Length: 231
Image 1: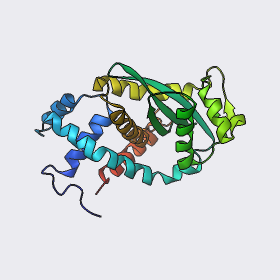
Image 2 (image 1 turned 120 degrees about the vertical axis):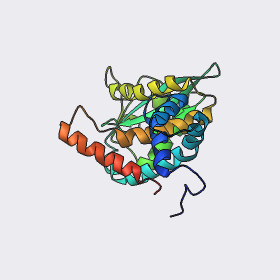
Image 3 (image 1 turned 180 degrees about the vertical axis):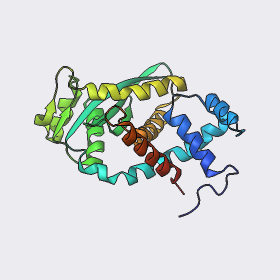
């Protein structure tokens, strides 16, 4: 495998640490710079911006490739919902698909939330994961209109509190969005949301469902796997 870090003076460990801190935690570029300086690493906040733009999508793609086993059980139930994101004073929509365990399957940014946008989002998710047994959504009319075209209208479920899984999964992204002081354009939104979803899935260990020992083992395994990305 070609060394992707060959033209950088910093070590791969420092680059991975900076990218993980910025994407995973609700920190600004300058806060990451300060935290790294406390560890004896003197870099500019613009370097952190360049690193996450350069290596973030690469790390996210490698994480998705290593999680192939997840495809076998992601087709049971999907939870679909959209997030309002304001860019330059205009409202955009980030469509998000979450499975029954809270794993973020797909994110898709659009300027509208009509039938055309919902149909494009559903086709994008189904291309990667296939057709689910059931799809839980809110009462947005774009969902049944798009599912009618696909032919899985009967698999839609709507109801009060049924879509709490998707609503709760928005919270880490919302916290991260606040630290970034919003996005500049829809391409940056799509890029960051995709990277954030993959890294969130990688480090999401369901702490509240496992014992302390199991959580520590899973956390150590996730960190060890992270340190081997693009190695």
